[in-house]
Amino acid sequence: MTTESGAFCAPEPAPRPPKATEGPYARCVLCLEPTEYAESVKGIVLCPVCEWQEAQRNACSG
Image (tube, rainbow, N blue to C red; front, side, top):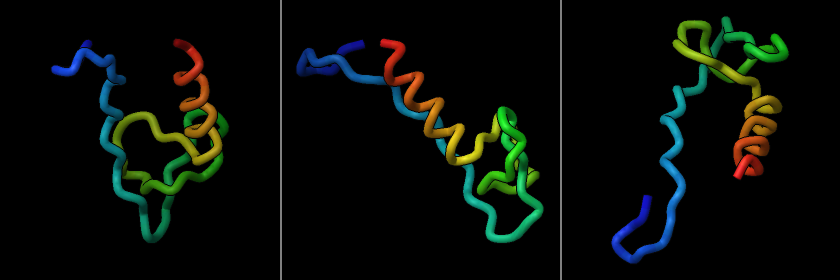
């Protein structure tokens, strides 16, 4: 994928759900720790630690 200037760019990240102000909080699908998101959020929900680790894996998968 190239831009008009010819430089390569990474795909846009998926939109993040809004953070919950009160519980109950969703559990991380990897470590089962509480996340910043409400239980009603659809899809894969990660805690901040697992989210950061997943971003590192994706950045280095080159």
